[in-house]
Structures are given as structure tokens and as C-alpha cells.
Length: 394
Image 1 (spheres, rainbow, N blue to C red):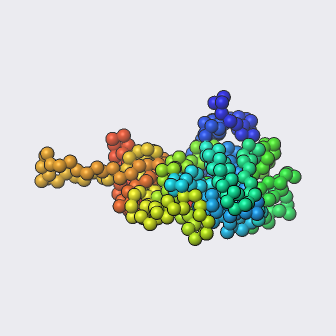
Image 2 (image 1 turned 90 degrees about the vertical axis):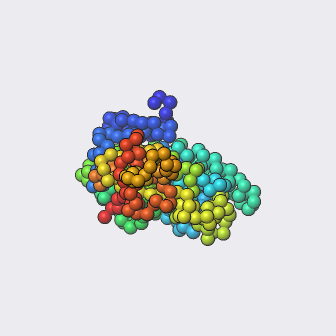
Image 3 (image 1 turned 30 degrees about the vertical axis):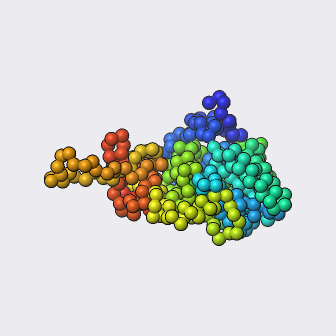
């Protein structure tokens, strides 16, 4: 892993004895002790994550919101200052380049947070699109990729508000308590201004904190110290994956790709009501008109295991094999293929105690309660289609 990028918190992870993995070209903590213990900590108390491999791209100017409405599928111009919106950046053919969150910092400033592996792709796409937008509109909107200088720490779990409230300046605790979901505000921790967002990727209440790289170590240590009495546990990417799967949250490269459109993924994030002609609009309008993901093609569904073995990404989803009819004569025409889909993510659920999976399945077989099998290397295992998410807090 000598050629991998390291976050500003790499020394903290090594001191804690983390096991590392290559994630999008970054040396990231996979786990510190036990993936299972870390998973349960987030569900019951709180977990501490280093997410500094994620991207941060600033979009600035009087026309920033209008520009983002041409670059992304959502209506970003409509969100208020201090709010955030989950959206997609797509190709002209409607394929998904990335899913991301856009925070409106001021009237004329947004921060777009793409996935780590797609940061350079998204930054390049936004740069290209802003040049075309500026030329067409006579605008001076600017796009800055600030990812190299910003660290991101997340605190996720039922005790996360208590932990964050204990480290902010005393007269700012009300900001933490009143901050809504998908909202952000500036707070002071240890004399340093931090952008605090109430967002996350675990299915629990939680916060994400953005700060300069040189302030990340002190903040990490402050959070660990303050969280000790609340059961705060450092957590790696392994439990983050099991947590997001239970919460039915898609992962780029698994559930999302340039080969899929939003309707197949069940993401109601495309705004056709906004006036801007965003990239991919015509293709997505055509996909919606043909019922893609609704009456044609495939749709992302949840699968609940009825046995003990879990399906994994890439495994086939098939119709259960019927018992041969006594009158079925040998040599008859070959039966149609039983293949109806493919698993995108799957593993045993630590919280629910049974296997779960997400899969793209032919729409004819996506009704909740439908019995399907996952082919585990020639051994079909029984699953049932269920509504997502598998787990909801509270």
C-alpha cells in the first residue's frame, strides 16, 4: 500500500492498530477491532469515521445555483442557505456518473461532495460544464476542487448529538440541537470553525464535520475524548458498508453506475419541473416515458434471506426451480432461462440476524413477497423481495 494516498489522520489510525484497505486509491482503515463490534456501536451508541478521502468541490458565483441546475439532475437553486440536497450527476445518455450531496453555504456558494473514487471525474465534468455555461450565459461562475486541503470526520449513532454538543462552544450547543436533517451550520470546536452537517451514510442520526487538514488530528482526538463516556467507537469502512446496506443506501460501483439510470435505482431525485436543460434530461425523459424501472427493464430491490447463507455482489438472481411435472416428457423444448437479475450488494445483517441483499431484478418479479433464489455457485438459496430499507432507526 506504499503508493496509496493517506488522509491527514493516517497516524491516528496506525496508533489505534487499524487494519487498512485500498479504497479508491486511498489507504483507509478497514476496521480497528471487530467489524461486528463497530457495526453494533453505531446502532447502539456512536461510531467515529474518517471520511477524508471524499471530495469537496466549491461552486461560487451569483449564478451558482442556476449552473448546478444545468449540471445535476436535482433542483439545487431551490434549496435554502444552510440546507443540503442529495443528487446525481449524469451523462448525456442518463447514465449515472456519481451520486453526491450539495450543501448551500451562502446565497452564492455551494459545496458539492462526490464519492472518493469519482472525485476527479466529477470535478472534470463540472469544470467542463461550467465553461459551457459561462460562455452561453455570460456568467462568471467558478468551480474549485478543494479536496486536497479538507478533512472530513463523521460521528454516527444514537449518541452522536450528545457527543457533538459536548465539544462545541457552550453558546453554540443550541445549533447542534436545532440542526435539521440534511442541513449544515458553522460551529466552533477547540477555537476552530468547523462546518457541521447533519448527514450520513449509516441509517442512524449523525453528523459530518469538515475542517482543514491541519486541524483534523486535534478534532479527532477531542471527539474521542469527549465520546468516551458515550461509548464512541472508532469505525472502519467494513462496518460502514454493512450499515449502509441495512439502510438500503446505494453504493457507487455496486448499485449505481453509468449503465443505470435513476428510475432503475429507485431514486426520486430528478427534477423535470425546473426550467434548466440539465445534462441527461432528454435521455431521462425518454427513459421515464418508456417506464424504465417501473414497467420495463429492471429495478433495484431488497432481498431478505430465508436461509442462512448470504449472496454477494455479482451473484445471479433466479426464479425458484419448479418441481418437474410427472407428465413432462424427456426431450421437450428447453425451458426459458430462470435468470432474472443480479446481486449488487449482499451479506449477513448484524442487526437483523439474517442475510440481506440488494439486486437489480426484472420488473415482473419485483413485487414484495416474491420468492426468488440467489445462485451461490450452483447452490440456490431462498430469498424474498422486501421493501427497502431493511432497517430504519426508531
